[in-house]
Length: 151
Image (cartoon, one colour):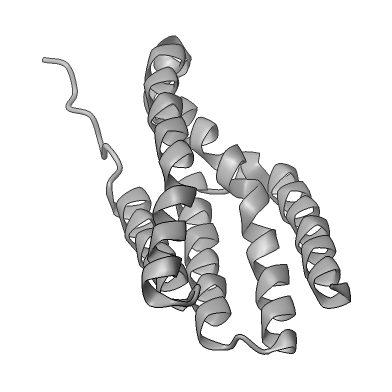
């Protein structure tokens, strides 16, 4: 129980620190690259949680994961605003946030079913890591690019 409490506390502190650091530099960095980095770090930590389930490994991976989790909620609206502008933000982010909430509603049940089917959290954590890796690639390389100049 003490180890679990330490892991949760450490992840919460690192989530706060990760968000504070990003907030300090968000106006000066490419947020697509930052989001990709956050998701890759999350991929690494979820993989470590699955592959190294020792007390020390779980605490260390929880701290690293904590650095990323605070930014998962901060970065999407920043990216939408920068990519599509203020005029389109409400409509586009409203649709995106709705999709995020649907996944948030069903995700825990899906991972619970996977945990029951496999008998451990390793496979669901690895699935989450792969999804984060795919998300990082989509965010970094899926930008709109240069818009054509009006004729």
